[in-house]
Image: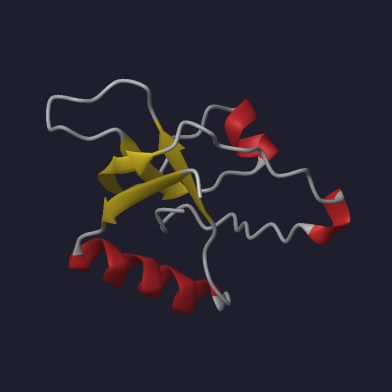
Length: 101
């Protein structure tokens, strides 16, 4: 094991995520977890947001942040998982702009 992190997501945010999943008839949502080297003013270095497609990143679409937290243990050894073939990745996108992600 390389690191243990905590992440807090507000109840309201969880409800909004569930509303979007239901509205888009999705099976779930993919999150990206970011672990920073520096701590913010609130003592946090972990954040999570709804994963973006390559196109969303290219047009610099705003991230939909869902939670934040902190790393509370690490052995300093975090490995990168090898990439899966592109056809194995399920991308959940929708053009409905009224929903947050």
